Image (cartoon, rainbow, N blue to C red; front, side, top):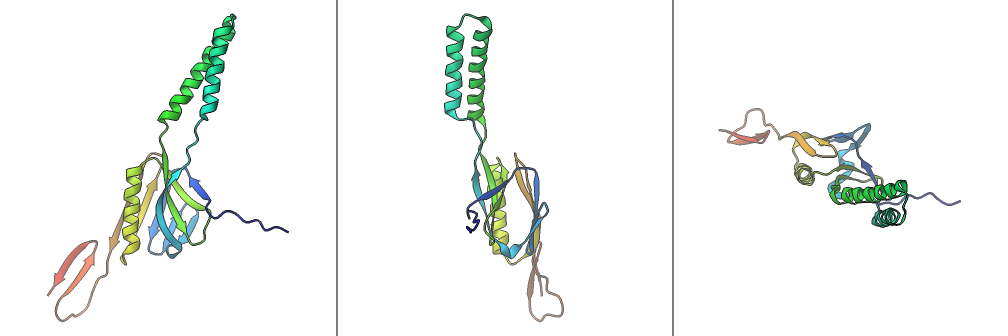
Length: 183
């Protein structure tokens, strides 16, 4: 009996509008929840964009030109012209279709790795930068990543520790990125 082994480098693109909730304890999107310590990283990953094969477009264009040029019947000539126009439209769509990228969530469990798909590369770079800083810090906080096909953005707050009680000397505390000093 052969074992059914799935490849380790498979990805699971998530195309619809998604909200990702991130705290120091959990990462949640849709109906899936992961412990934050099981997240090994966030990264930018290219996503394969489905395009029409150029050979198919070229073939359709040539067949359309041949049919439009060599047949005398008006309906065949019109059919050939329509085929050539469809090929030109497909070529234009291929040329101007934006490249897609994704926020890839790397997990200890391996595959399939979720990728939140977007065309907003600048927003994606900012999200990865903020999440990197959050992973590197010891501060508590939470973020929400809003991901859609055309944009990705992050909102959240990070707070630090608060010192309370009688303290001799000086102390500093960071709460919400504001630093205060008590003497």
